[in-house]
Length: 250
Image (tube, rainbow, N blue to C red):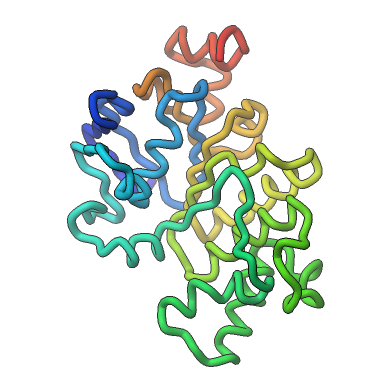
């Protein structure tokens, strides 16, 4: 199994608060890795560290190594190139206040693609990959803000895919959605892992069990356990993991 991301001895401080404590974990290529744990345990903080969203946070200090394909994310990458390689989808859909087409074309244009034919192809391909082309192909010129929540989230996934990333980070991408939209995003994630690597923060234990290959359990800034999802849910090695996944706390 080839790992696309390796995290070694990672600590993260926000001023005096230690949000991540000695994290060592790998994210395997072409798999879905679920990050589970109660609120405030460090899952989203870790996710944001992988594409340097924490760069803008005052008082944030990171130690240890975050490697993408063996290269140090904090030393060997220009942040704009890094974010092309590592896309991010947030908890609440955040389409730009512009047309569906311009949302998806935004990233490619930023990276210098200008020809209409090229952009047309990229937009269609990304919307197809996000399983929403058929729904939106006649609405490309309409505002993205007029879409339903589930459609907006799939549009945001298409926007992330348009720049052809290697990794897709998803921070509770279905928590604001209804069950039908949630199912669509889950099915989409399973399809996308053939081409991309996905790290998914979720509070939904059933979702983690359903779609992830590997699951990491976090508690109070520490990674308590990381293993194949079937093992974590059937034979957790740590009592705290078992208590969390069976709903005794969290």
